[in-house]
Image 1 (cartoon, helix red, strand yellow):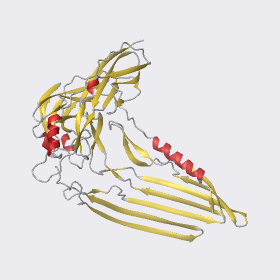
Image 2 (cartoon, helix red, strand yellow):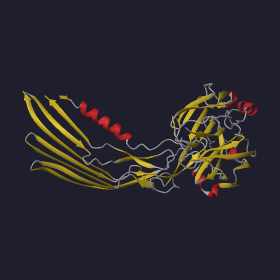
Image 3 (cartoon, helix red, strand yellow):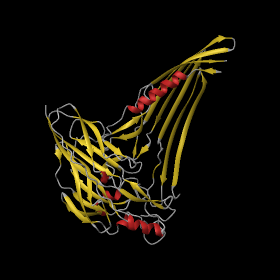
Image 4 (tube, helix red, strand yellow):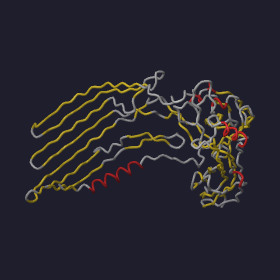
Length: 183
Length: 292
């Protein structure tokens, strides 16, 4: 159990990544441009020869991104949809009390045996350009991120005794308006 | 080119901060809303391998102290460097436990291999010694199962300095004084009104925070340090302003206070658990009448 001197940290781990991506593009069809990409991948690690293979911390089995834009006269409209498998996480399956510190400590399940919930976000953007004077032009725009207001989980959080769990979530629906002036 | 997205950035930052606060879970343990182990106490607080030590547990429940006897066991599994909990994951398996019985308190001799399994001694060969804690100590885990809870106490074991130069290690052996559990001055509370703020004060004798010899690895010398103290407050009801109060090792204070907002009328119980930085523990149970 005690490692030999200077061998507490060694580089004996191995990793493997397999994946494929399918992409379709639309360019200039009635003012519409866009692309659709689907990725299927699996990324694993083996920390030492004696240990089992596990999922990599950022493994995402499925990833789908669709982006589209439409431009007509001074108007530009755009949208994006992202869907992805949640990242692997090592879940806490229990806890014990550590009397030395007075705090609870987690009993963990299998390394990266669980996953965060799937990620989904839809974003929209609209822009209206206009001429000001001479070479000066302007544009007003509105962006709406996470249009559905989905509470995407970014991390698992626990109560002090690990009896309750929840998720740290990302941005809620966020609308941003702006004015751009350029010369 | 001139751009003006400052307001947009401010909105995004504010929304991000608020979002991060939304899902906070209860991070406090001061109010006893279910049976819970508050401390596992070893007496003496520090001993050499083979010496007898008496172990007891402080267990609280919403209706007062729990008297059910814990099931005791030594864990003999050292913690590998790849784990970051206080004890090895193997201590959760019955196969690495040495049963000591089911008693309110149990007396057992510390395993003779303690300094090898949990301390700085290494088996023959060029092995890496285990790391001491911040106070230079090594600990034998003792498990107490009670009220559907698993608790581990860490019983400090006196080991030789394995990595120090010979004269320093010899000096340490001669001068190091084993830790003693601190003591708490008695706390008595008169009946308190319901829904009122009550100041709680805990104090301990000046000698409870002991001075001790510490081997400073960088300078390879012995220095004298003083124990830091940390007092945890618990109550069966109401609200406590803080979960714990601390006195650092450079501070000389021997008392700490907090505010307890009393619950509705009826009997209540408070627990005070005092820990020193070498693993010593003292506890006190205070029964309080909350009456108009």
